[in-house]
Amino acid sequence: MTVDPEWVNPSSDPEAVRRLVDELDCSHVLASVFVTREVTGPAAADRWLWPSTQAIHDPGGLGDLDLAVDRLASAVTGVSRCSCTPTAKSTASPAVPPSARSWPTSALQAIATSRGSTVEPDPQRGATNSLIRPHWH
Image 1: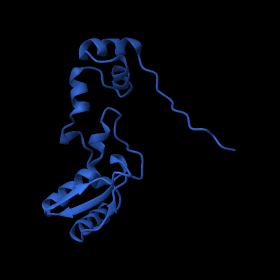
Image 2 (image 1 turned 90 degrees about the horizontal axis):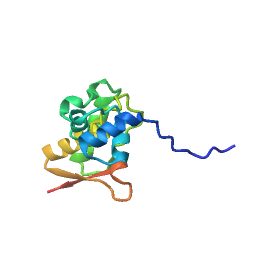
Image 3 (image 1 turned 135 degrees about the horizontal axis):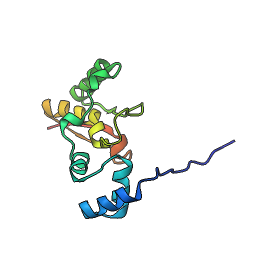
């Protein structure tokens, strides 16, 4: 038996959506997305759209992080390819945007930059599932 995937949108509070449309001068769709992610006002929207480093969860709690760092550093140093793909669902609050949860790519970019290299996503895999290609200058 096969099950067709179905996109399920969580319902949002119509009054909260209307309030955000007015407060943010944004579309109904964007306000609905914000409400489902517990973004309740302009300050919360700013934090969601432009997160600070304090919004990023400490990656030290992930298992085998030391092995991952060694692998990434060796890929950058050896000018080889490696994939940086999260394998588990994030436990971060839905109010924290995906950009703040995508620390592996940011960490790899920091490692590459510190070693005089650049990092770019493989266009065939897309930015969210990038094959990292370090390049020396």
